[in-house]
Length: 185
Image (cartoon, rainbow, N blue to C red; front, side, top):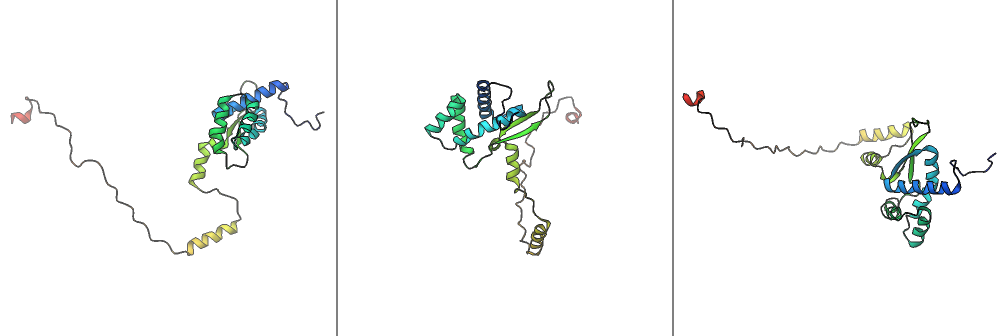
């Protein structure tokens, strides 16, 4: 029985598990997105997010605490530099786990874990339009009625399109050969 046993052992000893999670975290920091098994991704999230939270406050104590977990100077520089600046305003939830198809060899559940602020695909959608939320239908009709009753603004004239190609053909013509009909006439 495993009553109250909340740690996911991943079939490893404590030292092996610590090394595995440290290496996965360093790779996540370096590449911003990694593909691993679903169980490892879920354990990695629990391991990495407190370290990312520490990177929001860049001081010597936090750097030393994070270094005791990761043991990688390049990962520490990246974490406290680029990543710390991007996640400074985010209150938590720095990673996203996306399930992938099962692995062919052993049918293990696979997942991609990525840093949320470094995914350009989702950021483009957020910039183009406002975030849609679920609202009642009644609220939507009230705004539509307000739009239809408001007077329309004067249309803005568009600037004319100017064709930038030259009006005359500037390519040199080849001289006619001596034996052609044009020269003989």
